[in-house]
Image 1 (cartoon, helix red, strand yellow):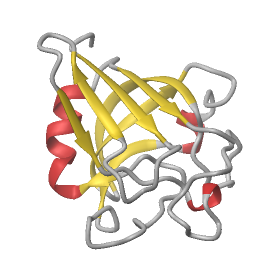
Image 2: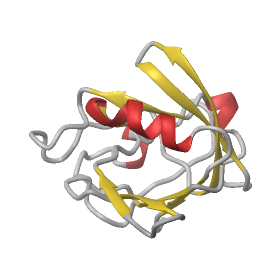
Image 3: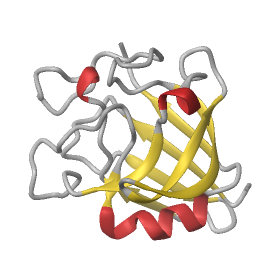
Length: 144
């Protein structure tokens, strides 16, 4: 899927729309709120500072991924991520997926945290899965 590229900037606060979806045909950029894992921010400051590729860490992982298929899970419509680097190549085994979450809402400052997934506002999950499923580049940036 070369229509879109997604970049998440975990150097920013979770209060910011720090997920950027770039339409490669038009150059348009849409921004979204996105959660990070509670293992990346144990003090719930809104800033992800620790990253891991280890199961059970509840931390977000950094690096390049591609999107996999969609499925219906405990969070509703969701999309798998396939990690391509040593920093995130356990994403499938860890069930690190894009899903909607009630705690990703601008009323929460800082946003709620996931178990490592880049969760988005529930009202955008259908649009995002439709646009990004099936091999779209998905890059998560941060500083450890």
